[in-house]
Image (cartoon, rainbow, N blue to C red):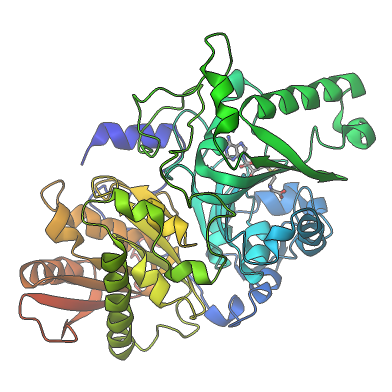
Length: 515
Ligand SMILES: C[S@@+](CC[C@H](N)C(=O)[O-])C[C@H]1O[C@@H](n2cnc3c(N)ncnc32)[C@H](O)[C@@H]1O
């Protein structure tokens, strides 16, 4: 394990937990979980209305400090999520309705992926999920204690993260839309370095939506403890900065303003003059390098060779899922036919998995992670099941994450020799395919398994597909972690490859005061 890297992650506020410390994170006292509380197939709104147990996430700060904003409400031993937020105290539904009026592309499958920077308890992402838009909700572990843990308890895709000193762990030109509702990121400070990062991860033609100060300052400034002149100047500064990186104002009403990233590269030519700020990034740092890569005050200009990178050039969702994206050609051995082959392989494998683990596709499994995906084929094969998948691409593997995003799925880079940026007990199913075979030389595999144990919910499952050698070694460690595992054959009974189906059992620490 690289301790320095882990330290850096902690400094950035990204990693929580002790997954790689060589010990198992045991269950909370009186942990309770009734999956029906948060999932009603085909109607994700249910998860917004119902809630999770107080003992699963024993933090009361938001309930006490933000009760007027309706983020959540504690009732007895339960948290309820009425769907409020700082910019939508009366409910996220009407807020998103207005947004859809401003961005009709949210309605017809053009916009499929989004990122919510400073997501709170992820009510925006939860609402969009029900409208067929898949959102990566992102927030740090700050004074809004456990907000991301709440999001995951509700069954909404979320990750711990902060826009701070390092690039976010996503490739360039990936999200169709980015959103900040009063997310407190000082967009115009430090030469607009945070906005430049949003520009990097948005695809050409993608939308940046801001609600809250300084938008609508003319009507709102009195409530913000400031002067109208100050707010006007903030808004002008923001507009100037956005224009300088080729964003255009797309629409604006009340508290919501929408800007669009340029769909073509013509505008970026002006950035070549020596006295222009921000400049184009030189070629020194790969546009997709996003693992411990410092933010830089420059514009990442989209690679012109990809003709179908822009929002309007991609097929609409759901056709988009099955079309091999342009960026597959950047991957060694990647082609339309390898993409198609990968997809049909995962469809077959899923049928087999469903026989081995009938809980897949039922309300027992909601938060899923594919720990080392190539093109997101496992996630794509489950697209009609009532679950979502966090696709993880190793920071040491081929850079396939752009393909995952281009087909309308979401994911992140990660190095499995470190803790994953999530809370304990947040995933219901972990899947890996040959991760140990590929990477066990980099760190002791017991640390990876202990991290899996940390992030897996009690009674959650793991499907481990590995060479026979690693399956036996994993089974021994899994037994030590008190998982129940059984070894199964692959669909075609390939001798060298086996599948381990495991379930993390519920157990309690003998120290009743710990958690
Ligand atoms: C006032 S709350 C708004 C939450 C939510 N957007 C809403 O409208 O209800 C501010 C949010 O921004 C997050 N935040 C603050 N600084 C951030 C940063 N640098 N990067 C990412 N999130 C940040 C906070 O953790 C919190 O989730």
